[in-house]
Image 1 (tube, each protein chain N blue to C red):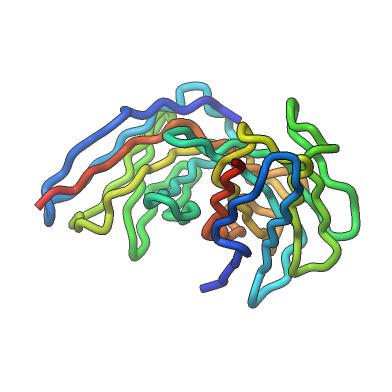
Image 2 (cartoon, rainbow over the protein chains, first blue to last red; image 1 turned 180 degrees about the vertical axis):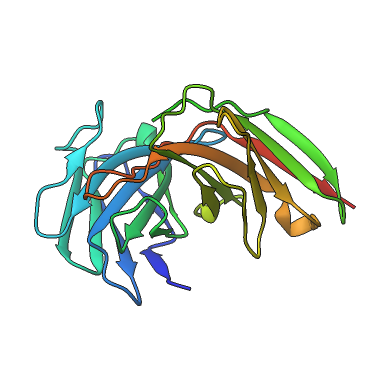
Length: 116
Length: 114
Protein backbone atom coordinates (compact mmCIF):
# COMPACT_ATOMS: atom_id res chain seq x y z
CA UNK A 1 0.00 0.00 0.00
CA UNK A 2 0.88 3.65 -0.15
CA UNK A 3 3.45 4.94 2.29
CA UNK A 4 3.68 8.24 4.11
CA UNK A 5 6.87 9.00 5.97
CA UNK A 6 7.69 11.58 8.60
CA UNK A 7 11.05 12.92 9.57
CA UNK A 8 12.30 12.99 12.19
CA UNK A 9 10.51 10.25 14.10
CA UNK A 10 11.44 11.97 17.35
CA UNK A 11 13.12 15.22 18.24
CA UNK A 12 14.18 16.99 21.41
CA UNK A 13 14.67 20.72 21.29
CA UNK A 14 15.26 23.52 23.73
CA UNK A 15 12.60 26.03 24.63
CA UNK A 16 12.61 29.01 22.29
CA UNK A 17 14.02 27.19 19.29
CA UNK A 18 12.17 26.16 16.14
CA UNK A 19 11.82 22.67 14.80
CA UNK A 20 10.73 21.46 11.36
CA UNK A 21 8.87 18.21 10.73
CA UNK A 22 8.62 16.76 7.23
CA UNK A 23 5.80 14.68 5.82
CA UNK A 24 6.35 12.87 2.54
CA UNK A 25 4.13 10.72 0.37
CA UNK A 26 6.57 8.21 -1.04
CA UNK A 27 4.68 6.60 -3.91
CA UNK A 28 1.77 8.87 -4.70
CA UNK A 29 0.99 12.52 -5.18
CA UNK A 30 -0.91 14.12 -2.34
CA UNK A 31 -3.25 16.93 -3.29
CA UNK A 32 -4.01 17.54 0.35
CA UNK A 33 -2.10 16.90 3.54
CA UNK A 34 -3.41 17.16 7.08
CA UNK A 35 -1.53 17.82 10.29
CA UNK A 36 -2.71 16.47 13.62
CA UNK A 37 -1.48 16.80 17.18
CA UNK A 38 -1.98 14.22 19.88
CA UNK A 39 -1.26 14.74 23.56
CA UNK A 40 -0.69 11.72 25.82
CA UNK A 41 -3.81 9.62 26.36
CA UNK A 42 -5.85 11.95 24.18
CA UNK A 43 -7.27 11.69 20.70
CA UNK A 44 -5.89 13.22 17.54
CA UNK A 45 -6.75 16.85 17.02
CA UNK A 46 -6.70 18.28 13.52
CA UNK A 47 -4.47 21.34 13.34
CA UNK A 48 -4.56 22.34 9.70
CA UNK A 49 -5.25 21.31 6.15
CA UNK A 50 -2.74 22.13 3.45
CA UNK A 51 -3.23 22.00 -0.28
CA UNK A 52 -0.28 22.04 -2.63
CA UNK A 53 0.63 25.52 -3.73
CA UNK A 54 -1.79 27.36 -1.47
CA UNK A 55 -1.91 28.59 2.09
CA UNK A 56 -2.88 26.17 4.81
CA UNK A 57 -6.28 26.33 6.45
CA UNK A 58 -5.95 26.23 10.23
CA UNK A 59 -8.52 24.88 12.65
CA UNK A 60 -9.97 27.23 15.22
CA UNK A 61 -7.61 27.85 18.09
CA UNK A 62 -4.44 26.85 16.24
CA UNK A 63 -1.94 29.70 15.92
CA UNK A 64 -0.87 29.95 12.31
CA UNK A 65 2.15 32.09 13.15
CA UNK A 66 3.39 29.48 15.56
CA UNK A 67 2.74 26.41 13.44
CA UNK A 68 4.00 27.22 9.95
CA UNK A 69 2.90 24.84 7.25
CA UNK A 70 4.41 24.68 3.80
CA UNK A 71 3.16 22.38 1.04
CA UNK A 72 5.51 23.23 -1.78
CA UNK A 73 5.14 20.03 -3.77
CA UNK A 74 2.69 17.18 -4.23
CA UNK A 75 4.87 14.88 -2.14
CA UNK A 76 6.13 17.09 0.67
CA UNK A 77 4.58 19.16 3.42
CA UNK A 78 6.45 20.62 6.36
CA UNK A 79 5.31 21.77 9.77
CA UNK A 80 7.55 24.19 11.62
CA UNK A 81 6.94 24.76 15.30
CA UNK A 82 8.36 28.20 15.97
CA UNK A 83 9.64 29.34 19.35
CA UNK A 84 8.73 26.00 20.86
CA UNK A 85 7.73 25.76 24.50
CA UNK A 86 7.29 22.70 26.75
CA UNK A 87 3.53 22.81 26.21
CA UNK A 88 4.16 22.16 22.50
CA UNK A 89 5.56 18.74 23.40
CA UNK A 90 3.29 16.31 21.64
CA UNK A 91 2.95 13.62 18.99
CA UNK A 92 2.54 15.23 15.57
CA UNK A 93 0.97 13.13 12.83
CA UNK A 94 0.43 13.97 9.19
CA UNK A 95 -1.79 12.34 6.64
CA UNK A 96 -1.61 12.59 2.87
CA UNK A 97 -4.64 12.33 0.64
CA UNK A 98 -4.41 11.27 -2.96
CA UNK A 99 -8.04 11.87 -3.84
CA UNK A 100 -10.91 13.97 -2.58
CA UNK A 101 -12.68 11.35 -0.51
CA UNK A 102 -12.13 10.87 3.21
CA UNK A 103 -10.78 7.32 2.97
CA UNK A 104 -8.35 8.16 0.20
CA UNK A 105 -5.59 9.13 2.61
CA UNK A 106 -2.75 7.51 4.49
CA UNK A 107 -1.26 8.49 7.80
CA UNK A 108 2.37 8.93 8.64
CA UNK A 109 3.99 7.20 11.62
CA UNK A 110 4.11 10.38 13.67
CA UNK A 111 6.85 12.57 15.17
CA UNK A 112 7.38 12.78 18.90
CA UNK A 113 8.42 16.33 19.88
CA UNK A 114 9.82 17.01 23.32
CA UNK A 115 10.63 20.59 24.26
CA UNK A 116 12.90 21.00 27.29
CA UNK B 1 -19.72 15.70 11.24
CA UNK B 2 -22.13 13.70 13.35
CA UNK B 3 -21.02 12.98 16.90
CA UNK B 4 -20.11 9.38 17.62
CA UNK B 5 -20.14 7.60 20.97
CA UNK B 6 -18.05 4.55 21.76
CA UNK B 7 -17.32 2.61 24.93
CA UNK B 8 -14.09 3.68 26.56
CA UNK B 9 -12.58 0.23 26.66
CA UNK B 10 -13.25 -3.40 25.81
CA UNK B 11 -11.49 -6.70 26.31
CA UNK B 12 -11.40 -9.67 24.00
CA UNK B 13 -9.80 -13.10 24.17
CA UNK B 14 -7.34 -14.00 21.45
CA UNK B 15 -8.99 -15.97 18.66
CA UNK B 16 -12.47 -14.75 19.51
CA UNK B 17 -14.47 -12.17 17.60
CA UNK B 18 -14.21 -8.59 18.81
CA UNK B 19 -17.40 -6.58 18.37
CA UNK B 20 -16.92 -2.84 18.78
CA UNK B 21 -20.08 -0.75 18.90
CA UNK B 22 -20.52 2.85 17.85
CA UNK B 23 -23.50 5.13 18.24
CA UNK B 24 -24.09 7.87 15.68
CA UNK B 25 -27.72 8.74 16.17
CA UNK B 26 -27.48 12.16 14.50
CA UNK B 27 -25.79 10.94 11.34
CA UNK B 28 -27.02 12.62 8.18
CA UNK B 29 -27.89 10.93 4.93
CA UNK B 30 -24.65 11.79 3.16
CA UNK B 31 -22.31 10.86 5.99
CA UNK B 32 -20.32 7.65 5.88
CA UNK B 33 -19.16 5.67 8.87
CA UNK B 34 -15.41 5.16 8.99
CA UNK B 35 -13.32 3.03 11.28
CA UNK B 36 -9.66 3.61 11.99
CA UNK B 37 -7.36 2.15 14.58
CA UNK B 38 -4.20 3.42 16.21
CA UNK B 39 -1.64 1.13 17.69
CA UNK B 40 0.38 2.74 20.45
CA UNK B 41 2.69 5.53 19.22
CA UNK B 42 1.85 4.98 15.55
CA UNK B 43 -0.29 6.81 13.02
CA UNK B 44 -3.90 5.72 12.50
CA UNK B 45 -4.66 2.90 10.10
CA UNK B 46 -7.77 2.78 7.94
CA UNK B 47 -9.93 -0.29 8.52
CA UNK B 48 -13.23 0.01 6.69
CA UNK B 49 -16.05 2.38 5.83
CA UNK B 50 -19.67 2.18 4.78
CA UNK B 51 -22.82 4.18 4.09
CA UNK B 52 -25.77 1.87 4.75
CA UNK B 53 -24.91 -1.58 3.53
CA UNK B 54 -22.83 -4.01 5.54
CA UNK B 55 -19.25 -4.14 4.37
CA UNK B 56 -16.47 -6.68 4.66
CA UNK B 57 -12.81 -6.61 3.78
CA UNK B 58 -9.71 -8.55 4.70
CA UNK B 59 -9.44 -6.79 8.04
CA UNK B 60 -12.97 -6.56 9.39
CA UNK B 61 -16.70 -6.42 8.84
CA UNK B 62 -18.91 -3.40 9.37
CA UNK B 63 -22.53 -3.85 10.32
CA UNK B 64 -24.71 -0.73 10.07
CA UNK B 65 -28.23 -0.78 11.47
CA UNK B 66 -31.07 -0.11 9.11
CA UNK B 67 -31.79 3.30 10.66
CA UNK B 68 -28.03 4.06 10.48
CA UNK B 69 -27.99 5.27 14.05
CA UNK B 70 -25.39 2.76 15.14
CA UNK B 71 -22.82 0.37 13.77
CA UNK B 72 -20.56 -2.45 14.88
CA UNK B 73 -17.04 -3.22 13.77
CA UNK B 74 -16.27 -6.91 13.88
CA UNK B 75 -12.78 -8.34 14.00
CA UNK B 76 -13.59 -12.01 13.36
CA UNK B 77 -10.54 -13.59 14.98
CA UNK B 78 -8.78 -11.10 17.20
CA UNK B 79 -5.03 -11.43 17.73
CA UNK B 80 -2.72 -9.75 20.20
CA UNK B 81 -1.65 -7.39 17.42
CA UNK B 82 -5.20 -6.06 17.23
CA UNK B 83 -4.74 -4.35 20.60
CA UNK B 84 -5.24 -0.68 19.74
CA UNK B 85 -7.53 2.31 20.03
CA UNK B 86 -10.40 2.01 17.56
CA UNK B 87 -12.03 5.16 16.26
CA UNK B 88 -15.49 5.38 14.72
CA UNK B 89 -15.95 8.53 12.61
CA UNK B 90 -18.92 9.85 10.69
CA UNK B 91 -18.01 12.22 7.92
CA UNK B 92 -19.22 13.61 4.64
CA UNK B 93 -17.61 11.71 1.81
CA UNK B 94 -18.32 14.34 -0.79
CA UNK B 95 -15.62 15.48 -3.13
CA UNK B 96 -13.67 18.69 -2.87
CA UNK B 97 -10.45 19.50 -1.16
CA UNK B 98 -12.02 20.59 2.11
CA UNK B 99 -14.50 17.80 2.49
CA UNK B 100 -13.90 14.46 4.06
CA UNK B 101 -11.88 15.73 7.00
CA UNK B 102 -11.60 13.20 9.78
CA UNK B 103 -12.56 14.27 13.29
CA UNK B 104 -11.34 11.75 15.84
CA UNK B 105 -13.22 11.17 19.09
CA UNK B 106 -11.87 9.34 22.11
CA UNK B 107 -12.28 5.89 20.60
CA UNK B 108 -12.40 2.48 22.23
CA UNK B 109 -9.29 0.93 23.73
CA UNK B 110 -9.45 -2.71 22.70
CA UNK B 111 -7.23 -5.06 24.65
CA UNK B 112 -6.82 -8.55 23.27
CA UNK B 113 -5.50 -10.95 25.87
CA UNK B 114 -4.12 -14.47 25.55
